[in-house]
Image (tube, rainbow, N blue to C red; front, side, top):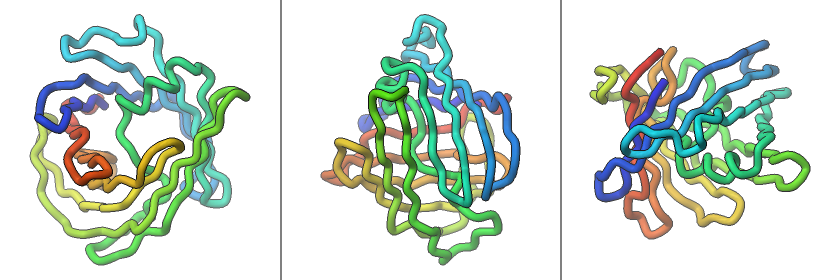
Length: 186
């Protein structure tokens, strides 16, 4: 999958490429590995072509992740969609409250980040058009706090079987920080 990332003024900030490398298990107990590539507005790698490996573990419904490269781990926050999709139950409907979630991200043995997702709810069901096409989506709103950051509002349009189609991440003052839109599905 590839998302185009725009800043709060609509200017292209970059691109995020996500590849599912492997997946074992189900949404209660799983091991998932992703590889990410981050590109600048001219579509040149910002990591000298190195892929960012992101390993996710779900154990008894709790999600944690592991990053083995500090510099790429620090960079990823600017280029990866926010949220914890693994904790959104299948079969969601408009009006549902989604359970709060905590995601622990370990960067080697040097640093552990804690991401908290609260006040999560399914607000509406909408047809959303992005460069990759038009999708039937659920709009999930929540408030997210990342280690060292303020509590921010995030709106995520999720399509069954696809994942994040569109996402708007706000700043603490309520203005738009970033917009992610799906451009390609591989």
